[in-house]
Length: 313
Ligand code: CP
Ligand code: NVA
Image (cartoon, rainbow, N blue to C red; front, side):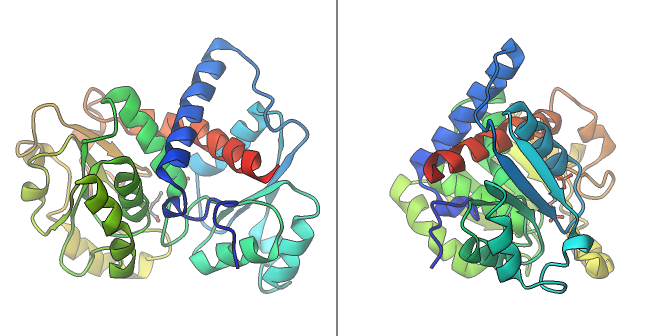
């Protein structure tokens, strides 16, 4: 039985209070960094990092962040470890737990990260799986607070695939009082079981979860439009089919005409310019908050580690 509070496997595992506390910590750590105040909150600790999929932002900011907190990041090469091939996941988890204080994992299957949490004894942090990207949601929330204002009552229109990023943003919205709108082609909605799990939170707060197949309808009352790649890491074989379905689900100047004039745009990155978002939108730095969000990955990851270590100590 996994103690989901000990880990950060899904945003939906954490309460509103804990999510807000983590966003507040990220904002405080950003101010500390800018003011040159030391934050040795992981002093003497080591964090194992295992990345099965490519990464720029996540792998860089976790390492830089751990270093800034006085800890030591241990980058574990997937080929060398051979998780589940050279050695069982159980044995890797049990050994690693005896050396490092936490494990940050980016992998395909959510089940793998759950096994590491089950068999290891230290906190496990999800740095993206096929199903969830909770760290991205913390950085997104911090960006909203800084660039737009309080989360409560804001509407995010997610134009794209109903998978990992959309799922974690739905959990963020459900827990913090935001409205979440997904615009996607038929058949690319989020998993029903997950939405069923989140619905009581929307109902309790009187907020809305909506799905549209027409992106123009979806953006009408949005405060922020969000974009993610049409073809996620590991789905490369589905590229041609997905691209044909997703063609109308692009954030461009035409779609923006249907959104309120105050709307902002963001993307988790990497962006496939010309597919899900145009150059024109990406390079409009008054409109596009993706780089502010990317900057916040550093602070969000530090905050997540501080939060899991606080609960674990
Ligand atoms: N958004 C994000 O997770 O970026 P990377 O894949 O580069 O880490
Ligand atoms: N949905 C994308 C997110 C990348 C950060 C993917 O999984 O590749």
